[in-house]
Image (cartoon, rainbow, N blue to C red; front, side, top):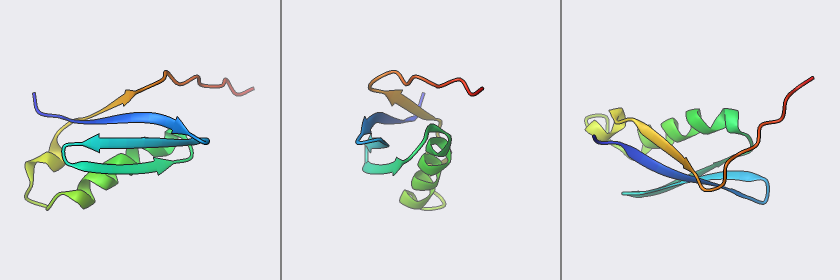
Length: 71
């Protein structure tokens, strides 16, 4: 199955998502922004006719995130 894989890690409070084939990266402040920002990156990186724009995107977290429960 074709898919784009991004490794996600935390650096100084930012979430950094890095794809390696081809090289591309983005950063966001919180997990809610991550999906839309990665999708936007993919759409900007590939031409409109490129099939990779429609491939599933896998986010591989280098360290498991801990989500806080709001009161």
